[in-house]
Image (cartoon, rainbow, N blue to C red; front, side, top):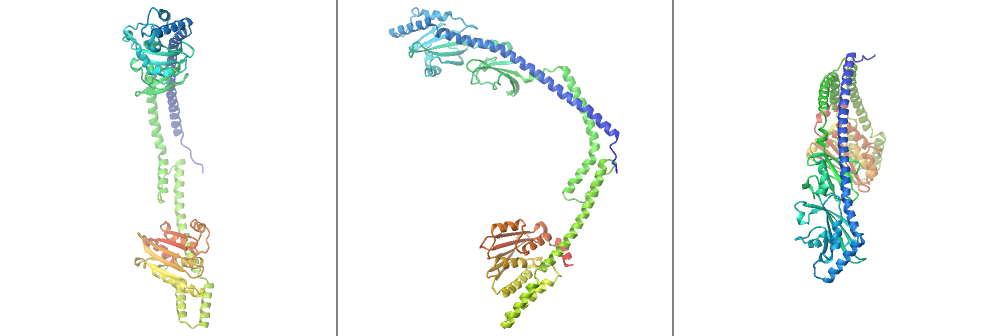
Length: 590
């Protein structure tokens, strides 16, 4: 039968909503992404330009400081004047410097010109002899000999240059005007393998900062040393602190968080001492520059999107109600409520699906009834098979043994053997009651053991230990006899030994233990039995399957054995819900 299709009106509504919603959402997303990416690119481009200017300016200052070192260190006249001054200072031993005697060095320092303005040049010789291009009146520089960085430089090779970064201005006359200076130091020798001298060159930090101030506010620029410490910053209060965020590799930018705000960060490496420049542009300032036209378009698109989304949800809700009902019905059926039906009907695909689903549930219920009937017939057949285990060969051999005993002996135990055989035959043939008290089942086992001992001329002992509250517990007939037979034949190997039956109640569960001290089983045989593999003898398998059919998952059977230590079988039969199995008993007895 051909299924009717969804009406053309439903198709038209669905396609119209999709055609309106999808372009609106895509346009909104693309427009937002394009605007933000464009503004972000502009901000990064502006930061790159600012860093290029700052890099050029800062590199010129730093290169100028290095050139000043070279102009002093590699000027033979200046080195000669320093040697003469040092020798005269050492020979006089007065600890004072004759300014006029050493004017050549001072004049040389004064003639050096520097890029960017004020520069402090200091040459330190041992024992307190130093030269500067600034006045040291009331400003002794002897403290420099005790500085940690000077002590560290003493152990380093000659011509080593170290960038000290920012430190307080040591020139008192200019300390108020220039509170911080950026310092570089170089170690050199007056003579080969001789006296070491130090050139110290410092520039006011404000000379670096003045290029940053041109971009005050947006972006924020700063100069960092190789350890990430701020050397110069648009805000002087940040000097000496650690960089807010790591500088990204050159040619890239990052989006970083600092003090609860987002920033676009751009970095440029400088060619000196591992120093670098870092630019931080507030991310909020970038995104807030979207024009009012974009804002109105954004709001309008959101409004249309919400309107069409509401309409779409309404129609989808109407169309999916039958599907939801089917899903709820399937969930209840999964939990075991097989009487549940969806009731979904209609001349559409979901209606035909609901009808087919309900018909399928009806067929499943019919199949369950059929399976139950087949299981009942199967249990009856298994019981008949179990009853047939005491086969004619056993009866023949037993009777023949009794006959031979009567011929050869006239002992009174013959009567007991015949009584035991009669009792066992009566229990086998009687089908009126398939559930018997535990004490009656054990009595049957005792008669069976007497017959087996008589037949095989052995004296295997049977020990019975039943708790008083278990004697009247009802269990299926011939539950214990196959297990005792298995222990006698396969455990004791039809020889002398002991078989013990113990029973006790444990939390509404009847526990029965059958133990023997026979040859036992190895681990492979026990594992094969637990996994349902083939075993010698049909008794163990029949008892387990029969009790599982009767009691279901409430029944448990376990076995423990080891070679030379015998075997132990434990049955756990539920006592609760005994009446739930009465229908099984009635079927079996029928």
